[in-house]
Image 1 (tube, rainbow, N blue to C red):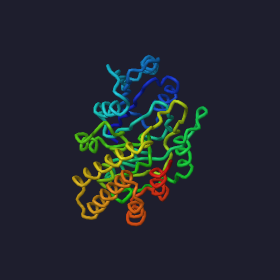
Image 2 (cartoon, rainbow, N blue to C red):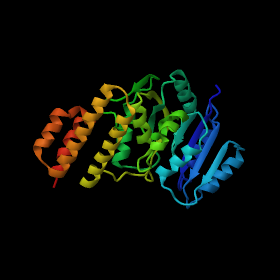
Image 3 (cartoon, rainbow, N blue to C red):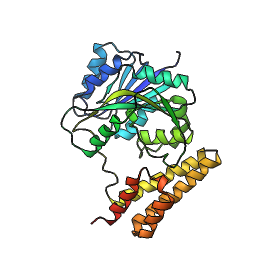
Length: 309
């Protein structure tokens, strides 16, 4: 294969688990052509650890980039993607452990299915220390139900298209795809949300039912504070509307356009319910737009959120 593979890892105070992750990259069954490690002004020994590891193993294709100012993880990933030269680009977190055949299996899948722009895969959750957060429990619960039969599913636009159900650490995307969307990139959004949604707009999102990483959960994992207030929920709806509008600029089929337009109506109605609390609005959401929720629980959750004391 003459295609090149790039890995973009972002780091920030990651010395605790970083060596295990770097070992899993170095020992891949398919060698990685380029590893770009973007350090975002760590205050621990992360940069020194990376530098010594590169020297210890004579990793000429590994590069440490140290930001002069802290960018935050969303901008840091984007900066790394801009530097990547490979045909296939893998985002990488600092604290997971890749299965040794991850790159080989995912690249093989994409080579055999050239229409796929973004390939997501499955993961196995593990806890390196006591972590009782609800987010970690959700990831663990999801991973137990994931298939491992190597099958491939391809997704486009449907009523549930904007909901992200795999983390970016199990993504692989083509540089061609990235180049086609980077001028639309907004670093207020996570990279996995942007990549997932644009790939679905193109009917080019593949889900590879095969576990490719040990997905570490621990007390230092970043925990989202989003959607805990009415204002943040409404802002999320506005963000979803913006992605639907970008979808309307990108898709070509009338069926896709109809779904996107209905999705905008659904989201505007959700906003109105959160702003007014009118029960008749929620009833319309539950009856007319039920399929646009991720689940029945999400529909009932709106009711609970608005009317809770």
